[in-house]
Amino acid sequence: MDQGNPMNVPATRKDLMIVNMGPHHPSMHGVLRLIVTLDGEDVIDCEPILGYLHRGMEKIAENRTIIQYLPYVTRWDYLATMFTEAITVNGPELLGNIQVPKRAGYIRIIMLELSRIASHLLWLGPFMADIGAQTPFFYIFRERELVYDLFEAATGMRMMHNFFRIGGVASDLPHGWIDKCLDFCDYFLTGVTEYQKLITRNPIFLERVEGVGIVGTEEAKYWGLSGPMLRASGVQCDLRKVDHYECYDEFDWEIQWQKEGDSLARYLVRIGEMMESIKIIQQALEGIPGGPYENLEIRRFDRERDSEWNDFEYRFISKNFSYF
Image (cartoon, rainbow, N blue to C red; front, side):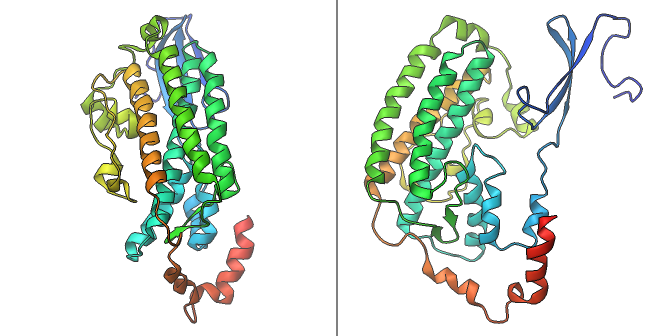
């Protein structure tokens, strides 16, 4: 790009407008800045500027144990808090060949899929608002609050849960929680049906999303897209099937994907994934076994004699310099 003229705009045009979108709310939610060049209502150039979410998390982790660091990781992505906790404990479990009790594995699966539903709902509401439909934005918070009620009952926190542990979870499910979650699953299925009636075949909605924002299969791979973005472009790839993490292989569910690669396809993938999440949760709730919710053997890691974590230098650094 020409450093003297960074924007790729016609030099002869005098009526163009350059607008900053983000990184603040409500345009980019703090994560991205776009320098947009407008010709009337037409966007003729857009320069993305990344890097607004770097918070030095890797540096903080240098003088923290896993238990001390877990409360930080939920801040990576407040829409996928359970997932950030899962990847943080999955690494040490794989390295140390630590076995997770089956009950703990099922609890993890339930929490992960509830987190997926909450995340997709908060995608759906603003997406619909952005294309001119405000009503679904209020509907999604109705269901999302129910998910957070379940999180709060199980973990004590609505958003930042600090629930996963190496070798299991922090606590067992409270009495009556499984029945409440089953009730939520039945209710949510009717809610998704309501979304589909309201949105999916709406002619105004289809006009604004069908064939819009097409990302082809090769483009999606080249750009490094993942999740529903990738699966909506014709790639049948889901890490739950590929990496076989947690105990997803014990449940019957299908990868949701579309081949069109447009905004409609991305919507359909997320709707389908929420339905599959309910299917997984119901199977886990109905088949959850008894037994422990954590592997007590891994506590031996904290009892190593003469550990460097207990010396003066480590305790001094962790209790002082981490505040700056």
